[in-house]
Length: 89
Image (cartoon, rainbow, N blue to C red; front, side, top):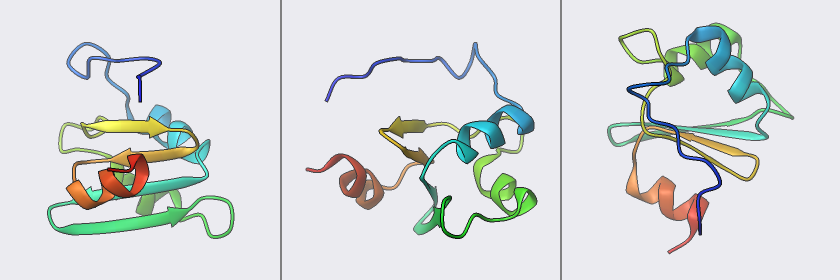
């Protein structure tokens, strides 16, 4: 799989509003924090903005890295199983 766009999170920062806009445009948002994975179906049962922001925003107030957009799925944070689920082995 080849990336269409690569954005350096050190140079391009997405604040709360931009990060929520990116997440709300996705069909599914997968948030990985440590060993925990939370999946949000953004079409059938979207979370409240504050709940979504808690998962996707880092302590700096910017979108957490790494963040990948694969098709209509947004994957925030790193978890090997989540990456395999989204991108295959």
